[in-house]
Length: 99
Image (cartoon, rainbow, N blue to C red; front, side):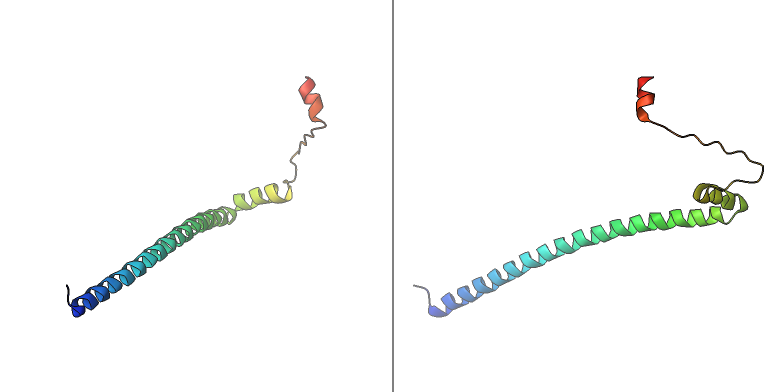
């Protein structure tokens, strides 16, 4: 029959190991959740960086005279003097399907 002190030592060691394992499992789960959140934030950062680069490219283009003309044509439907504008209107999609 084992002595009482060895039973207490084994019980204490088992308790400490159980607490350590449970704590380790919780921390591993927390690390996984933080890793997922970090990946999501990195994805957002990459997307925002791409948008920023696109906007910087547009700024460089629109700072030139040709870029300003293109912007005026695209956004404000402006034309230079002497240019002819042809406007094509689609009346009905049914007419196009019959032909």
